[in-house]
Image 1 (tube, rainbow, N blue to C red):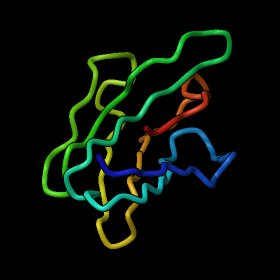
Image 2: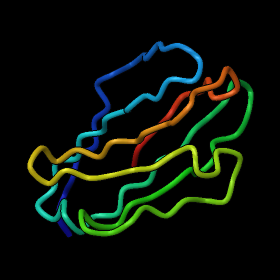
Image 3: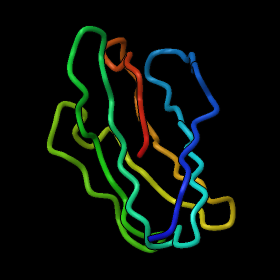
Image 4: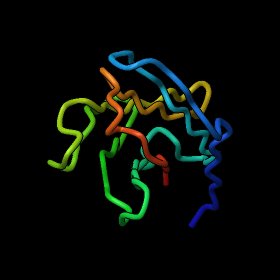
Length: 101
């Protein structure tokens, strides 16, 4: 098994309602192109929930059929070893802590 490290450098993101945001996650791994990256969110005083995952740089994202629906998408960039979570048309209800793993 190879070791990998996941880092999120952007601790806070502010935007206007109805705008889209990108949340980056860097993963150092020798198998980045095929590593599965999961995204989660946690609203204040609530449990952690799975949002979406992406399996390879060539595959489509797969989401949990949850509250965010088709508002989120994930992608991977093998050159920068980064996964990006995009949240479209932000609403106040989307305020949460977002995690990658």
